[in-house]
Amino acid sequence: ESTFVFTNDFPALLEDVPEPPASDDPLFQSAAASGTCKVMCFHPKSNVTIPIMKQAEVEAVVQRWIEEFSELSRKYVWVQIFENKGAMMGCSNPHPHCQIWASSFLPNEAAVKDKNFREYYEQRKSVMLLDYAKKELDKKERIVCSNDDFIALVPYWAVWPYETMIIPSRR
Image (tube, rainbow, N blue to C red; front, side):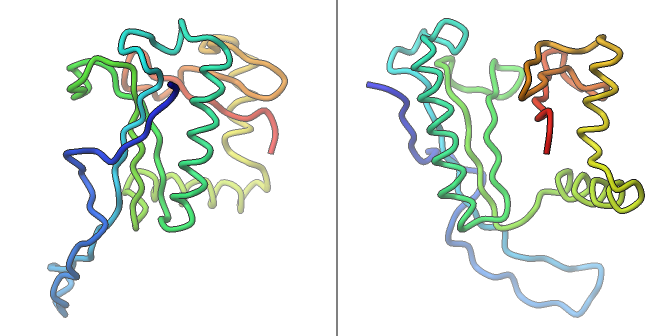
């Protein structure tokens, strides 16, 4: 009848994983990586994508993202909600859906970003993404859309031609 969330049949992360054996060798270190992977179908009809959904249906998707994030972040340090479209992105099903991955660890890329955000703040006493958003709003080269609360843009460092980022307008 609306959005539907279920555990991925072929998850990249599992909740119950064994602890690896301890090692004193600095070159052979490992740690358990536990987590869960969910799939969220946006709409009961498999041919209805977000751009053609009614506002209330899109709001139901966003509300479910909030609920899933809130629940999973109580147990896991990392929760990522993302949509992967098309075979090029490894998407096996054409119906409109997203992935929700939660893990017991911060992925490498997120850990590097977290470190850089902290260092930027410590040096400048300002928030890097807010500073970046202001510069993008001044340039008006990569803005997709914006309002009083959020800016959607194609990041300067985008890898994919359809990559976008949503940044809040304030802390």
